[in-house]
Image 1 (cartoon, rainbow, N blue to C red):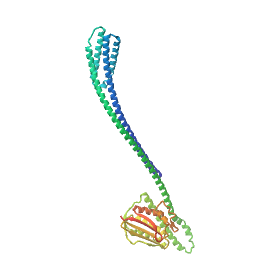
Image 2 (cartoon, rainbow, N blue to C red):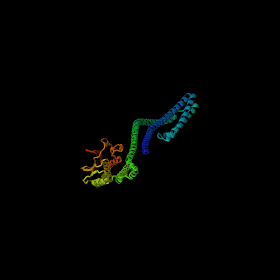
Image 3 (cartoon, rainbow, N blue to C red):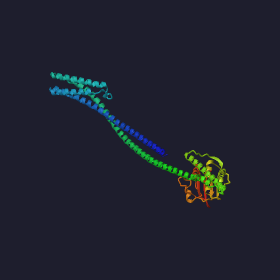
Image 4 (cartoon, rainbow, N blue to C red):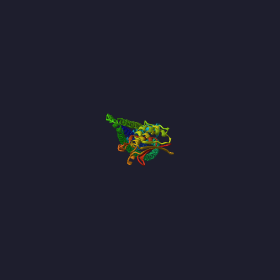
Length: 454
């Protein structure tokens, strides 16, 4: 039983912990996913702005480089100094390198590939004319700059238009980026609050679960200890109730041998047979009580209600104890009312049999036992009244409790049958009734139980 209780406790405990860990893992995954989305959006916008800015700077550098080349060409044409020619060649080489670095894929959302090809073609024509003019200037021939100015302005215009478009795009992207950044900041703030709230809730749930597990464990331990105490007490009651019958059987052989040659042998044998009958009846009742109590604890014993005459059941129980009553010369009074009740007939008979058996045990020879019934609007009451020596007033509260010691309840004429009274309470409780005991006004005890009528 201990292993079963602890296995059930630990199974529920680990299931709760696994459930909490799984939920925490889901929260962490969700948190990571949301933070990744916020960060990914910011990084994506930032990369797009960097890309557009880089294109803008490259085109602007290309435009400035072209204008620089023209200035160097004019300076060389005016001064014939070789340093301007070298600077012109360097600027030209740098501009074509920059132009070759452009990737058409970077311009698909800004301008078409034909536009890029046109710029490249105009650049080639422009530098071709510049080279031609430098060659003519080196021969001392004066040339007009109208053609080269025309080509240069066309390239400048194309580059300026693209850069204006890029400036507009970059400004729009930056505004969108700033708006998204602020929105993501707000979202992140609310999300962090949400995550902290979830974390606090998880911690609180963990605390409550652990606290509940501690309480359950304490309850199960107490339940186990109570079960062990009840088990020990049950065996103590059984040993107490079985001791007298077995002692009688052990002395049977010695008693029989002592009758040889005795002058009152016939009378002693008669008394001896009466004792055997009483002991057999007591043992039979004890075994019935033991079987019924075991069935009630395992759930095998079910309540089977039926309508019957309560007087007939009382009369049947009285006839069962007729020999014991006659042997002790006890006057047994039965009720006269025929009351019909709806209850489990066998259980009610067992309750009356146990109460009457205790009354006979506690009543001296020549005593009086009376069974009374009382019917009201709400309940029916059955009382077994005797004028025996009774029980001390301090022991009445111990009756009907399995965890109380029955060995010292009673007198030299008899002891209370603990298992029988416990079984009586079990059966009365199944009927949602009450059972109680107290002293008789004159002498002896009164044991009563009441059952609801409806």
